[in-house]
Image (cartoon, rainbow, N blue to C red):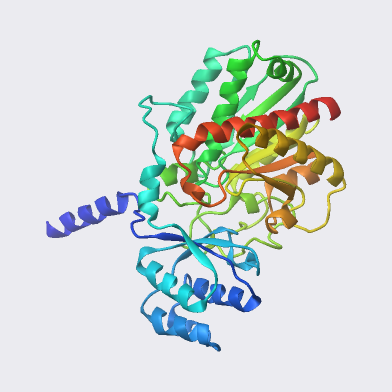
Length: 440
C-alpha cells in the first residue's frame, strides 16, 4: 500500500511543470579568447562530472575548481545558442540553474569579465510575462496554448471562407496535426509567400505573430488598400506553430524547452533542434551531433517529421512560393542567407536592400532598432536552418526575423509587448510582400 502511495506521489510531482525559482540569466562579454575559454570551462560542467573534467591551468580555472566539485553546473545558452559560438567582444546570454547561480555570479566577479544580470529570478520573470488582464479564451494580446491556437485557426477559416482556408500538411512525432492557413482571395497563377512560426518551442512571441498576421489580413481586407492589393494578388501560407510537440511541452512541463520531442536512437535525451535539421550545410557548424545538446541537428537532414512536412509542402509548391519568412526570437534582427557559411548569397545585394527597407518600415512605428544582414556575419554561424534550405531550394526571398527584445526579457517577453511587436513586424513583412509582388 505504501509503495503504491509513494509511486502515486512521485507521478504527481513529475507531472508538475518545472519551476525556475532562483535561476538567473547572465549577460557576459568576453574580452579575449582566455575569457571565452573561461566561459567554456563553466559550460563543461553542464555535461561532465568534475572528476572527469579536464585539468585546469590558470587562476580562473582554479577558482572554478574550488567551487564546482559539489555538483553539475547547468548553463542554458540563449544567445548564441551554443557555447561553441562564443567569441571575444560579443555578449553571451545564458541561464544558470538556482543551485549554481550565485556561484557562477561569484566566479564571474572574480574573473573580472564584464557581466550583468539580465534576469535575477527567472520564475518571477515568467510570472510577470503573463501580464495581460484579458480573460477571453483566445486573444491576440496574450499567449495562447496549442489547443486554443488550433481552435482559433478553425474558427477564423470558418468565419472567413472567401479569404482563409485551413489544411493539414502533416502530423508531429507525438501525433498532433500541423495545421496550415492559406490566406488570400482565390485566383489562378498567384505567387505565394510561406510564413512559419514556433520553430523553437520557448519563443512564444513567434506564434503570437502568426496569429496577428492572419487577424490583420481578415480585418484589413477591403478596408486597407495595401492589404487588399496584397491579398488579391498573393497567397500567404501561414503555419502558426511548426514545433507543436515542443510548444505543448513548454506549457505543460518545461517553459524553457527548445527542441522537438522525438525519441533519439541510443540516447535518453529527447528532441532535435528543428532549425538545424534541414539540408543546408547540415551539421557542419553551429550545430551539434550530440543528442543531448539544444542544437542537436538530428540523425539526418529532415529526420524530424515536422521538418519533413514543411519541406515537402514547399517542394510541392515551389513553382508558386516566391518568399519564405520564418519568425523567431530574440535579438531584433532581420537575417537572410547564408547562416551556414560566411559566403554571400548570389542575390545578396537585392536581399540586403529588401532587408534594409523592411527594417526601416519596422523602425518607423515605435523606433525599435533592428540589425540586418546575412545570418552568418550578423548573428552567428548556424548550419541546417530552414531559411538557407529554402533559398538553396529555389525560394529567392528567404528571411528570418528575430523579434523583440535584445535581452532585457529574452524568452520572457511580457504579453504587454505582443501588440507593438506584432504591429511593427507586420510593417516589415508587408514591405517584403510588396517587393515580392512587384519583383518575383
